Length: 452
Ligand code: GLN
Image 1 (cartoon, rainbow, N blue to C red):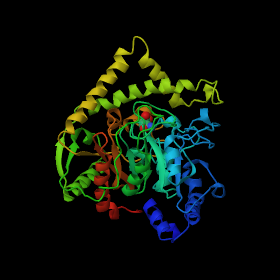
Image 2 (cartoon, helix red, strand yellow):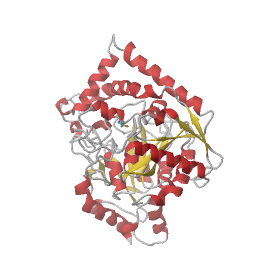
Image 3 (cartoon, rainbow, N blue to C red):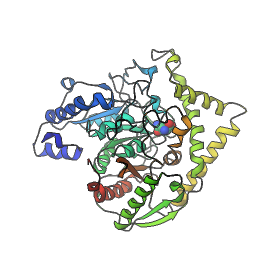
Image 4 (spheres, protein in one colour):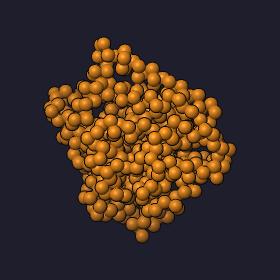
């Protein structure tokens, strides 16, 4: 019986009805981890069940390894931090802890979250539970794989250019990239400070909204966190999508593989059936987003990684992996005198155009619907040695990061037996609406997906 529960909602209901104890719940998740994580390899650090302090309503959680956890190894997937034990918790970790979540471990990711397949982790590559020869997506590879494999009902993650939505899409899970500034970045090991968004991956949309209710909000320790009031993300979740106008951006339909296109077309038929009005829209500067992102991101990375100077954190700079080195070099180049105007400044101008595209389109539509990735999860080893190929997997996710707008990835079906997601993108601080749309879509489609 216990092996069947997978969602936070089921766990909470079971506790209320006294159907099982928290120790039984945790033990059942640990059973799955012990059985399958030696193959999937989602955890960098696993705490042992005996060491956890549980109370009646405790819920299991695991953190992407770029979230600072007091007294627990925090590597960000990088050899540079292989021995780093933070003396403090990230604000998000603190909030979740205070709400009854108990950390059972830290999850693998691309080093410093640079990557799209998880293979840039300096430790090992995580496998996709749906196909062991393929990537679960990155950079939050461990977070997505752990939730998909049923090791935890929720894992935190970061989305700087797609690292929550893309792995969620590749593993049949739900991932939120909140509005920039909605969730505190304090205590998260920085990648690109102007686009880092803190979110999480779950099995269902309801669970996802439940967790954002805990993590969202202003944090005096993060000057870029928003002072705007948070919403109750669960309150309208059952309202359905009748009366909503959903935009289908034509630029997001270019270059899709055949299977992805078919899957997306059948998803938008579902949206229509559920009562949404679909309109074709254009965000004309979308094609520049990927280029702008891969100038701005390395630039900020070159600054953020300067703190790993070989004097602090115990290791020398020799431990930087090749992707981190590549980004430091590209970033310092784009920012250097003589190149700045042609690269960094130009990229920021393109970014402004991308932001304006979104502003304009959200005057006409409530939400946008788009594919998350142009293709299916690649095989491990297929793109890791070809950075440009890997970067191109991010074309449909980076625009939301450059603009700061929120986006929710929801399972949309299977192509060649591999999971495929759809993303709903909204205007700033519209997470509540995204959950409403995502929930209606999920309720209509979930029974068609295997293994859910
Ligand atoms: N794949 C993108 C990159 O490598 C995004 C990474 C992320 O969102 N952390 O930059």
